[in-house]
Length: 165
Image 1: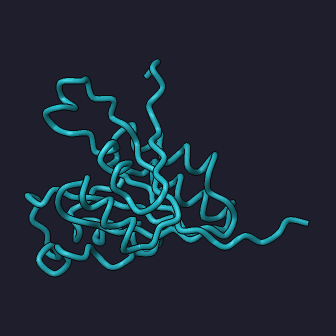
Image 2 (image 1 turned 30 degrees about the vertical axis):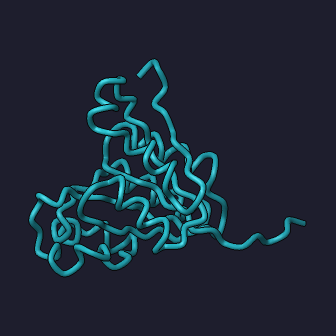
Image 3 (image 1 turned 90 degrees about the vertical axis):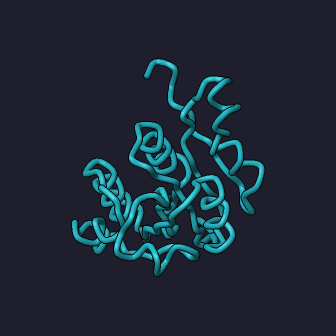
């Protein structure tokens, strides 16, 4: 008989890029277990002006349940453009593995906001994709995944896109 482990809170950084979808799929296949809570973390550029930005700029949005997040107006409200593929993956895992899926939106620098999320949401684990920037771009822009690995308050998994992609 399997011992019931404490339900974990697992954050997944999503920006709807190919690498963030690979990270989501990896987390679903390798990390998420029945009873866990998945928190999809979006960081929107602070240049994007949305209805709620002023209200939640410091703390991020409230946690948004998956069924609400699916509604187009909620996404527009927070300046997002959800991807059908991502929503379908989340729907499937919520049903098959009986996990709770929530979303949270932050505005600002992804490096800082992902670290803030790990701390404020008391995440047990954070999964992010790696863009695989070249050395020069990484030096100039700073790698988000690198910063998060160094500074987050929980274990971080960086999922790389396979070289064939």
